[in-house]
Every structure is written in C-alpha cells, then in structure tokens.
Length: 142
Length: 286
Image 1 (cartoon, helix red, strand yellow):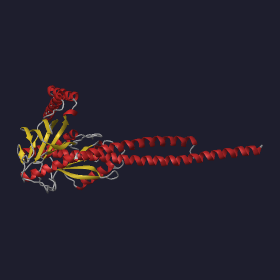
Image 2 (image 1 turned 30 degrees about the vertical axis):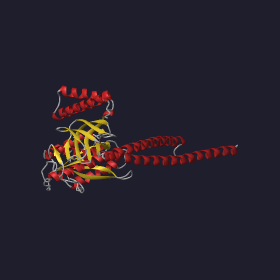
Image 3 (image 1 turned 180 degrees about the vertical axis):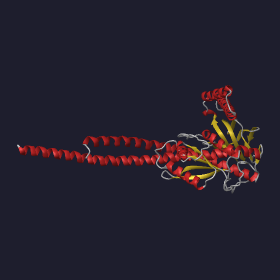
Image 4 (image 1 turned 90 degrees about the vertical axis):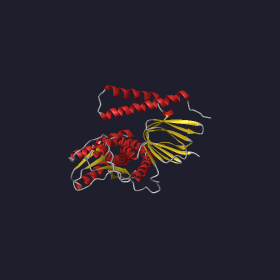
C-alpha cells in the first residue's frame, strides 16, 4: 500500500509520485503520514518535508501553505517548495544575511518586519536542509 | 514624382522597420510559449485550493468570515476594481480593449468606485479619465512570480476587511487563443465558493488547528492565487497580442517595400527614357 503524494506551489507542480511515508512540518509540530491516515486538513509551518520511498528518502524545504490528507492521497500546497539537491547554498546564505540586515537595521513598519522574519526563517530552513544533503548525500535505508 | 534617391531612402527605412518588427514577433512568440506554460503550471494549485475551500465550506457552513461575508449591495455600495494591463505597448488593441471594458463598467455603475491599476497603460488611462486611483502597481515583467502579487493581494484583502469596499472585482484580458483575448471581469471579494463541490466528501475532514483559524490562513492565499492567475493570463495575452500585431506590421512593411520598389523602377525607367529622348533629339538637331 502506497500513498500518492503531490506537492504543488502557486507556480508549479513540484512533486508527484507514490511514496511509502511522508514527514511534514505541521503548524504544531511534525506530522508523519502513512497510508490510511484520517482525512485531515492542516496548516503548514516552515521546515523540512521528508519523503520516504522504497528505502530512499528525499527532502524538500517548504514554507507556508497547507496540507490535505485523504486515506490514499496527500496534497501539500506550499508557498514555496525546493528540492534539497536544487537549493543553491550560497544564494540561501545571501538571503539569510540580507534578512538579518533588514531586521537589524531597525527601520520597518509592521509588515516589513514580519516579511523579513519570514524570509530569514525560510533562508535558514533552506540552508539546514541543503547542508544536511551535502554532508550525507542521498540517504539509503535498508 | 519623388526622386530616385528619395524612394531608395524610404525602401531602406521600411526594410529596417521590417527587421525590427520581425524580431519582435519572434521574441514575443517564444515568450508567449513560456507564459502559457506558467499559466498551465499554476492550474493544479488552483484546483486543489478550490477543493479545500469546498471541504471547508462543508464543515464551516455559514460561519461568518470577513472575506466570505456578503454585504448588502445597495445602490451606493463602494467598489474597487483591479485593472490589469501591460506596462508597454506595441501589442495591438489589447490594452485599449481592456481599458474600454473597464470604462464601461465604471460608467454603467457610477457611485463610489476606485481602481487599482496593475500595469502602466491602465494607470495612464485611468488618470486621463480622472477615475480615483486607490493604489498603483507596476506590471510584473515577463515572468511574474507569486511573491510579486502578494502586496496587491494584501492591500485588497486588508482594505476589504477594513470595510472600505463592499465588493472587489478584477478586470483582465483573458487569454482565449493566440488570436483572441477577451477582457473579462471576475468577482474577487467577497469570495464566492465554487459551486462544483460534487464528489467531494465534505464533513469528514479534521481541521488543524481548527476550521476558523484555517480559514483565516487560506482566504488571503485564495485572493492571491486568483490575482496571480489573472496576472499570468494578462502576460500571455500581452505576448500573443504583440506577436500578432508585429506579424501584421511585418507584412505591411513587406507590402510597402514592394510598392516602393515598383515606383522606384518606374521612376528609373522614366529617367532612362527621358535621357534617351534627349540624346536622340540632340543628335537629330546636329
């Protein structure tokens, strides 16, 4: 029994395949979803989404959005979704520095500050996901 | 009759124009392909979002949310129109048609109405017509991203929730085919949940953290997604309209070159004939 997973963003269909299990950053902590899960709709946090399939695993850095779970199907609707191996580490570092500068500079109105914080969070998660990938390479499980 | 040199100069400039319009035609064609692809690529997200909203509607029922609540639309309700055009011209009648469509909507429903033009052409037209502009956004170039549209969505949703407007519509040129782009108006707020909920097992979903908080997070995204789709349609319409306009311009230039070449040959022949007559009559006179 497998689970059909789709990851969509407003800009594209990022992933579609049958998988064994998916670990998703929910709004109140991580959710592990196996086939035959209760129908569920949840908000997503910012974090790492892990896909396990046939002994291998893949990661996406995702931010914002929500998740729809049906017994045989999971749809992740994220604002952004980047496959770990596609993340440009240098660019993410750059984004982090920029966001930090924006926060430190102190000149903002409410919306700007929260936007900068969100950007920082997103940059950090990208870096974390990408660094782990680079260190370990694609993981294989027995 | 213009001189030979004058005609040659005009042929030269028509050739230059033709080169430019032809290049623009091909550039627009390739950008159109990309714009069409990105329009298609957003479809899965939009469909899923509709699905989730329908699930929600089944659970929440008539629970009030500021973005869903229909208000009393009496005669003097206030409206906001988001009008999408391109920043640049040279795209045939595309922007003119969109603006004319918007103008009709504005004159037929007078009263309290403001506009938010997205794209320079729309702003210029609204300014000329002295329609009050609530905000203005520059167009988003050749490859609009979802992040580009978020400020527009935030502004529209915030002002609506604050009660500044009772209804928000978006007007944009819908991409029907390469040859046809049709300006359309869609209601953005209050949100009209799609009727098409058949086959969706409503009521059996768990919502985390809870349906109300979920709705709170989903609705602004829904507005942004609708606006994003409209921006992409506008981009696709712009390039297809530009492609067709430039194709026509190229053909016109070709026709012009042909006509000019014909009159050039006529003038040249006339000159030769005249010279021969002059030589012949000169020889006779001797």
